[in-house]
Length: 153
Image (cartoon, rainbow, N blue to C red; front, side):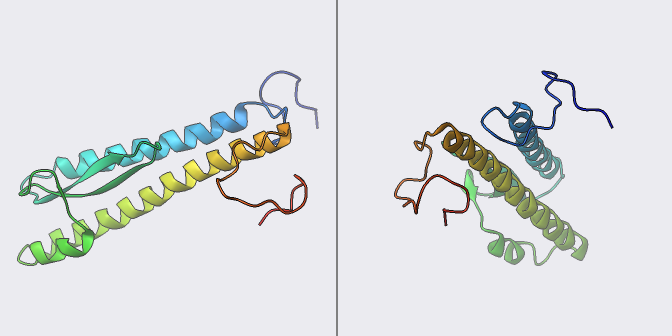
């Protein structure tokens, strides 16, 4: 088996201080895929003719993105999922099933987006600790011992 070529960006980095930027690019690409999937689901719900509810993409200042339900009958009104079944109870069962499946998918995508952002945050913190820079530590977090792995809780 041959060794990876030096300086190609495809080497077997271990995530250390000199880790190739490929790990960060991989994490960013995963986050981008999660955002793209959220946008696609939002567009899918908006294309349904005669729908009462649709998903909207919300963005926070922190960069977090998530989808949640909106009501076409109430301008700019977000609707928690537990209220949706009450509004659609007279609709066909197939529509109930569609909303339920879409809601489950939306929850999975929101979880995926949060997971990808967390991975990026942890990567940045690890890189900072390896450089000896603790400025990215969580506010109020107390350290136990030195900066070695395994000494944090």
